[in-house]
Image 1 (spheres, rainbow, N blue to C red):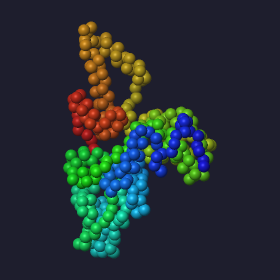
Image 2 (image 1 turned 30 degrees about the horizontal axis):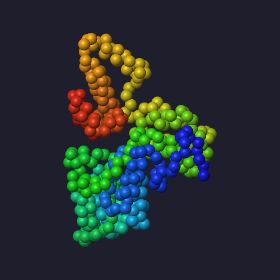
Image 3 (image 1 turned 120 degrees about the vertical axis):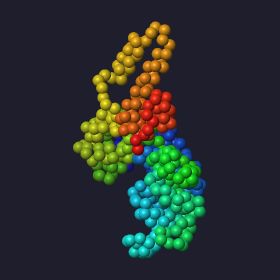
Length: 356
């Protein structure tokens, strides 16, 4: 089997779960949680940014469970309107709406004895959430336009790329449904939180796309790998996968070179990048401290707090502005969690409202 040469350091053992790549502590915890929950029938809520591999974990839970020989049915709740999604999930009877020319079973029936994966569950409407709650509680429902009750034995795994507790607070997501889904939550880390896994992922995708495209791109320039590790990856593993595929397709020889990377990665910038200024960070920090010392009285014993607080306030304010006021993105870019960012906003007297 083709093994692309990438500067990944010492060889590492294969990922603990088939089809999943990564040996970082954050991913090892995800693998452990996946194995523990698989043996049960409990509902699972997968949380994480877009592109972090929620569907792969859902499939792993299914395949490791006693239901593994049954069907695994995926539904993207964000891809359909309310009426179409209701019909897709629960089915319909002939004549129940325009275009319903025959009886049709829904995805919950199709997943009987198996698992249904409800992706982007946060996009469902309150009306549909009521029906989902009933299925979770009673394991029964009616097809659209029908009065006959259908019972199913289906495990539910849901996923969201948004904070469902925030949606509950906004009253766009039912609290009772949230707690029914959130029996076992598994949080998938963003790629920037497991940068040590990037060389492993690159090697995996190189092999995959070499095989698919009948290529032999087996080398990566060191500065390319450095840029990949340094980049923020707002699109996570899916974005990295696309970058490697592009490199394999566009490489004139057997090596991915720096010029084949997208401009954002070559410059180490992303959607939340801040405007550039002259001078490196160390020089700017030195200048700031010098100015602080020069302007402070000799007996000033608050200099540390004043300088650090001002830098922190300005950093948060500029990052929030660069991310269009979206606190979730700004917190991720700063490397802190959302609650910490909120506390800092209050502490520094900054606006707390978020652009959705």
